[in-house]
Length: 74
Image 1: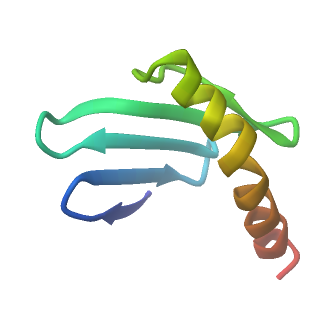
Image 2: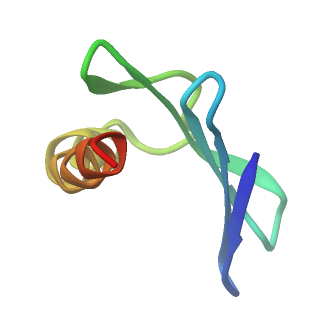
Image 3: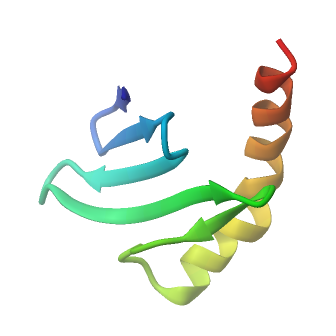
């Protein structure tokens, strides 16, 4: 598992099940929980508003998709 942290959030990437979980450092609560399945990110158990999850899936996903595919090609 890879862990990336800053002052606000901590992200956990589990390569085996291709799952990304982001926690709020001030509360230790999960705010984003998505998994890479069938060539796209799927919401698993995110604790964000629907619009924020939709934003992630629509706006952030294409950026991560590009980086994921580039990483898989190495």
